[in-house]
Image (cartoon, rainbow, N blue to C red; front, side, top):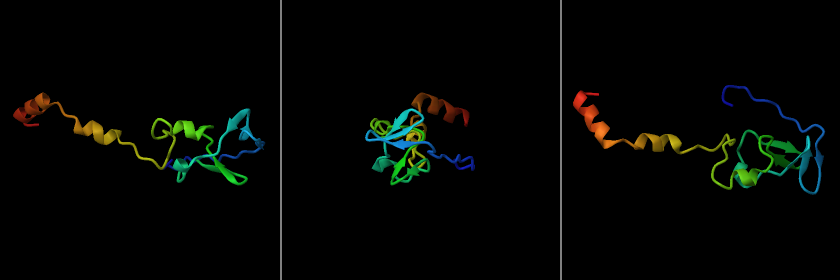
Length: 96
């Protein structure tokens, strides 16, 4: 979202029900505390909802939500730390 391609999402036609927010046939749950700071959150009446995923608590259950704009992943640092020692020694001999 850093390149300015932010879509304006409106919950026009949404109805608040006891189960959650009903929008286009999907029941959406309010965001959880881990979602605070995400750029995707949209306010409807007195609560915030995620237009990308209807049940944010389930998205965060197994780790970091892949839709979260405020969370950083650890995959880039782990991939750089794994080096095959045999290949590293061959590269050093060749001068790379």
